[in-house]
Image (cartoon, rainbow, N blue to C red; front, top):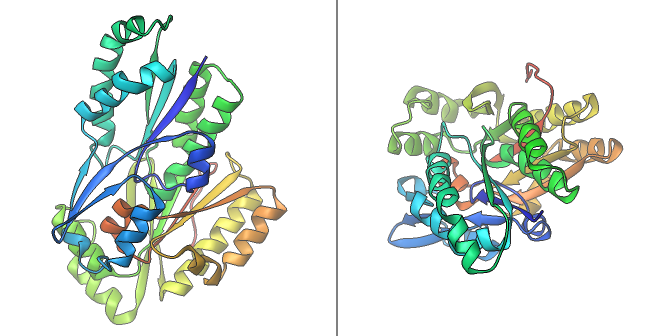
Length: 314
C-alpha cells in the first residue's frame, strides 16, 4: 500500500527530513505591511521574511491557513492518484482552524475519490486519516517523526493511527519567547487573553521570561527565568533530563525563529546534544515557520518531545 503524509506549514521540522520522507506541506498565506509570504517551509521564503526584518511589527499580520476547498482540491487533484492512504497531521485544533478545515475536506475527498481513481485506471480504495497532534510548532514533530517511521516500516494504517494518537497525547511542546510585548500584541490581535499587559510590563521591566508549554492542546506558563539565556538553559537542561529518563519517541526537535547557528551558542544546548548522542536520540534542528514567528516573535525557541506524563520542574 502506498502511504503518504501531509502537515501544515506551522509544524516545525527540518527541510531535509521533509524531503527524505516526501512529506507534503499545506501552506499558510501571510500578509504583513503590504507584502505576502507563502509559508510552506521553503528555506528561501523563511529567509526572505527574516531579511525583510518584519519580526518587530508582524504581530499585525493576517494569516490564512489552507481552506477546506484547497485541501479537497489538493487531494482529489493529486494525492488520491499518488497514494492509497494519506495521514494528514495538523497543529492543535485549539489554536488553529486547519484541523477542522482538513476534516471537512476529508468528507468530500472520501465521497468523490473513486471516480477520480477509476478515470486514471487506479484500482482499490483510498483512505485519508486526519490526526490532531494536539501541539504547536516543534511540539508537533514527534508525531510526524513517528508517522514517517511507521510508514517506512509498512505498518497497517489502523496500527499507525492508534500509535499516532498515543504519541499525540504524550507530546510536550515548549516555547521561550524573547519579547513579551510582541507576544501580547499578537495575542490581542487574535483576541487571545493568555498574555496580559501587566505580565508583559513586568517581564520587560525585570527581564523575566516565561517558559510556555502546550500539552494535549492546552497552553500556559510552566516556569520563568531571569533573562532569555537562563530560560533557554533551563529548557535544554530539562530536555536533557527527559532524554536520559526515556522518551516515547527517540527524538527531540528544536526550532528557532532566526539563524539556526544561534542554537549552539545558547547555554545548555551542548548538554542537550550530548544527552541525545549518549542515548541514541535524534536531535532535529529546524527554522521556526513564518507562521510561528508571526505568532510568537522572532528569536523564540521551541522544543518538542514525547514522554510519559510528568510534571515539569523549572
